[in-house]
Length: 328
Ligand code: GLV
Image 1 (cartoon, rainbow, N blue to C red):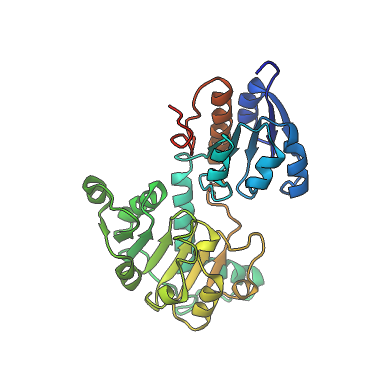
Image 2 (tube, protein in one colour):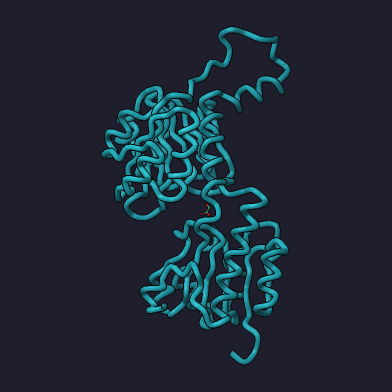
């Protein structure tokens, strides 16, 4: 490429990531406080060679047609359900994500949600601030123990395993299910048992979701599966909102089918089902699983490095369609 590559970035990046991209090409940053509007994205991508996007930017056939020069699309997220990867491959566009740099941070949030819902921390905070608290009481805001309970992890990839690792310190029995069994040494190290999903639902005190969103996992948490859970169990979701059927969840909470839910992701972000906002047995967080300064910096830098690698003539380290495009 004779002239400098033109790169569209849909969010102002931290300086460490900007430094990488500034050396690579000519950058057009969307600097608005809100996500870039679709029409603006389609307009700005028209003359771009690369796109660095967020998980709420939909990268589909329409977008790719609007950016006929695009060679690489880098999402600053590990989940890439926002990208139609086969559509990218069809246009010979490389798609990349940011795996491996947010596992512990996301696991920390899953645990924060688990502890907060079990110990009614958000309710307690609201109570103290309300001015109604009259001092220690033996039977106020009684929650559930976490220590020594059974933790069920659905999806035992990098993040699921980090969640399991924390369970060791809490003396928990860890069950997991997923599309494939982990190596025996991993199971041993994490004291985790591979079980059928139904058994996981039946026996877990906490069910934590760590699957990618795809046609197999959409509405995995259905009315039917919620009914398999213990009445005392809690659901934790830091994966993707549509993995949970929110109507079914709201109904299960209403009917005391399960004890509570702590959610960081929602079916129609940023819209929240009003049946959930009305509930005290649900904690609702604004998709902050990876939201620490350190981890968001790592994610941005990794996305920028993928783009830089491509324009350097190398295969981006996190190319999702590497094999489909026949890249080494
Ligand atoms: C966040 O949700 C991510 O996929 O990185």
